[in-house]
Amino acid sequence: MGVVGMSSGCTLAYTEAASARQGLRKGAVLPFSNRAGLPYSGLGQVDTEVAGRMAVREGTLRPAMGDRYRPPADSSPGAAKRKFVMKSSLIRRFVRGKRRKHRRVAPPEGYDRWAVTYDSQPDNAVLALESRLFSELLVRIVIEGKGVLDIGCGTGRHWPEIMSWRPARLTGVDPSSGMLQRLKVRYPNAETFCSAGDRLAEMAAGSFDVIVSTLALAHIPDASIAIREWHRILKATGSMLITDFHPDAIRSGMKRTFIAQGETIEIEHHVTEINQLQNIARKCGLTVSFISERSIDDSVRPLFERDLALREYDKYKGLRLVFGMVFTKT
Image 1 (cartoon, one colour):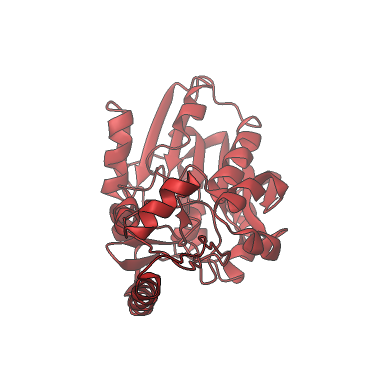
Image 2 (cartoon, rainbow, N blue to C red):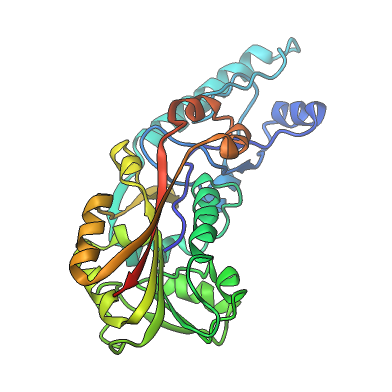
C-alpha cells in the first residue's frame, strides 16, 4: 500500500535563535514538522493541517519523542505571568491529547483519509529502509517487456523505479479510491482497479508476468487467500515480489496509525510470520528464491536525530522493521 507513517511526535522548527525567541515571547504560532520518530505507542504522523495550528510559548518544551528544548531564561517584566500562561497552555494540550479519540478502521477508510498527506513523509525511516529493500529485490526479476501488476499500489510510490525498467504494461490495484486518485494525478492514463487485494475477479488467470505488492499484505486478514489469488493471476514461471512490515516490529507494539483532525486513526493489520508465508507460498506452487530483512541501523540515525528522537533510536536500534521476498511460479 505504501508506506507506514513513522511519527506521531513533532519537531520544533527552530531556526535563528534570536528571531525564534522573539516569536516565542509574542506567543506566535511556529510550524512543526513531522519527521521519523518512533512513538511509544505505535506508528503514525501528524498531518500538516494539525501541525500548522500547533504553538508553543516561552518555557520548557518536551517534544513527544522525549528530548528537551529550553529557551534562554527571561528576566523581563511580566516573565512570571507569561510562564504561568505557558504552563497552563501545555497542561490543556496534554489533557486534550489524552482525550483524543482513537479509532481502528478498515484499510479503505483509513487510506482514503490518509491519502491527502500520505506522500508528505520525506524523512520516514520505514520509507527509507523499504525503498532500499525494494530496489534490491527488483533487480532480481525481469521487468522489461513484461506485464506488471502492483497490488496495493497506493499513490504509485514505486512506479518511477518500476517504469525505469520499461515494462510493457503496469496496472495498479488498491482498495482506497483516495489513494488511486492521488496516483491518477501523477499518471492520468494509468490502468487501475479499486479492489481488495484478495478478491481480483476482474483479473484473468495467468494474465501477468510479475506481481508486486509493497507494505500491503498485512492489511489482508488471511494471507493464504491472497497468495492463492495472486498465484492464479501469475503466468507460469512468473515472478512475485512482496515487502511488508516485519512481524518483529508489530510484536514490539508498532501500529499503522496517523492523526487526522485531532483523531488517531489505526488501520487494521494482521501478523503472518515469515516462515508461515513461506509455507503458504510453497503449498500454492511458488518457490521462494530470495528473502531479505532491514533493521533500524546507522543509515536511518539522521532521521531520528532530526526528530529529536535519539533516545528512541537507541531503544529500537537493531529491530527488524521491514522484510521482502521474491517468489517464482513453478
